Amino acid sequence: MGELVTVRVCEGISRGFAVDARARVAAAVSGADALVEQLRVRVGTVGPAGVLAQVNAEVDGRRVRVQEAAADLGEALDKVVDGLRSRMAAVASGWAPRPWPRRTRAHGLPAAPAPAAPVARVRAERPRAELPRTAGPQDIVRRKQAHLVWCSPDAAALTMDAMDYDIHLFTDPATETDAVVYRVGPTGYRLARTTAAGPPARTVAPLTLSPCGAPELTEDQAVRRLAAAELPYLFFAQPGSRRGRVLYRRFDGRLGLIAAAT
Image (cartoon, rainbow, N blue to C red; front, side, top):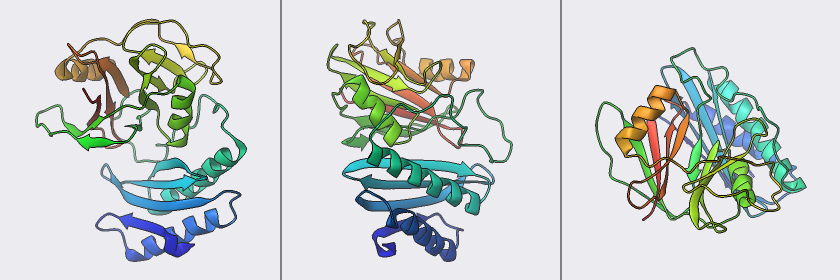
């Protein structure tokens, strides 16, 4: 199994650690009650002294991802391997809503200035293309444009959990509007749309509903609102088109933007 695991480490991390990571991940999946393929491990640094480890895989044909941050390489690998085992078990047993609140995965990083709310890990569905980067004092260092998947809020919640996101951008076919599901109390699952609408029918996820449509904001306005409210992420609508966008904080504290393709 080890030869089927691809490992990529950033500069400064030893090849010995890459070998250990490959062996640990291969051992974790060797006894799984599921077909596990396309295992890819990435390990890099975050902040001045933190480590970020990520595993991507296909489990019984479903894309899954686990991402963990820690203060050192060993702890990051321990956490991401444990998370992978849990994710494989969840896929094999069938999806069920995850408990809320959950543990803070950034626990163990050295103390550093951070937003009051947990840092978000977010992504939109494929296919996607890079948008041009811009420079400025409020750095949006990662930009992605996505042709959003049309799916039910339940399907969006399942994808959010499988891919280890805190927020997931999609298009709601019942209202034909862009929407997000995101992890927040009291149930751990909340639905918001660009245009206000009633609750979806017959959901499995214990969704609460945002009563208002997403605010229409420029990028600069969204950045200022995110900073002022110390939010981990912000769902907003592009002026004019009303297409959905998500501005979010990365592990390194800088900003990323996901935009629905217009």
